Amino acid sequence: MSSKSALITGVTGQDGAYLSRLLLEKGYDVYGLLARRSTDTLWRLRELGIAEEVKLLDGDLTDLSSLIRAMEVSKASEVYNLGAQSFVGSSWQQPLLTAQVDGIGALNVLEAVRIVNPQARFYQASTSEMFGLIQAEKQDETTPFYPRSPYGVAKLMAHWSTVNYRESFNLHASNGILFNHESPLRGIEFVTRKVTDAVVRIKLGLQKELRLGNIDSKRDWGFAGDYVEAMWLMTQQPGGDDYVVATGLTTTVRDMCRIAFDHVGLVMEDHLIIDPKFFRPAEVDVLLGNPAKAKAKLGWCPKTSLEELIIMMVDADLRRLKG
Image 1 (cartoon, rainbow, N blue to C red):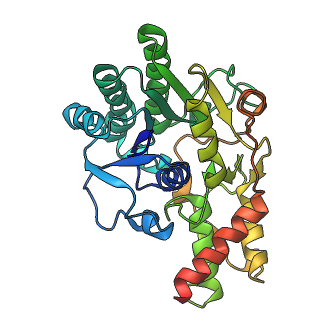
Image 2 (spheres, one colour):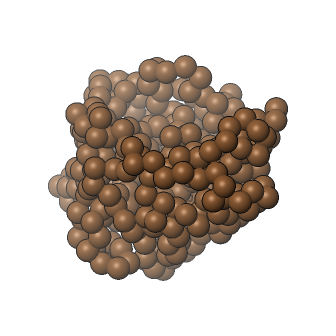
């Protein structure tokens, strides 16, 4: 047995996989909550070669009793709530589910921590989508929130619930307000992976075009493998707090696409089509984070540039589709 045990909800997602690898490398016993709703959920853990090392526990963010059992079995000293309905686009089609999983679900995890082990350190995966209609050119921990999607609204509930439990019950509870972070393990429904997968398919002659919505929206993109280190650093601090995790640089979807097309020697304009059906009911035009606090207090800074990230993703999709 390791001296430290961690429980991760959303362990089969992009962040859960990278965080699991990081914690295993640091000697933790890693337990992951597994909601058995779909097939082949473990592919990311297998991709990183850690599927046999993570101890999986059946449970669901909407079922408090399963979260209490997971806390008891894992004896977790650190709890990372990464589980969510995390696709912004789907939250308009499934607003009630998103509220239950992302909002009430986080509250359930906080309750389980408070009931079973209030000394455990808790991390909540907040999101830059809470800023939405931005109230400052560069967003930091003091910027007012203005969510523009059911996803952002649900995550805002989880964020403030974490603050409330920290202040009401003296829990070591932190919010990581993470800006967009991507990787070869990103789901195909997210725009970066949709782009890299399509670019490779076009290069290999498997499809002819890429259809997107608002390609002039701007995002602050980083590498998920860098960002999970910030999560861990938050739980190592003397007390809980809230931190923006970002690169401090913003890029349009258009320019992100161009990096991917250029890498495989294709002309973007020959294949990219703007399709109105991909526009959101309420658009978030610009997100740009200020990670100064994370740099100063956690000693964290991103290591991977956007160009390096997109090339990494394109190369990974090339290997997948050729193999």
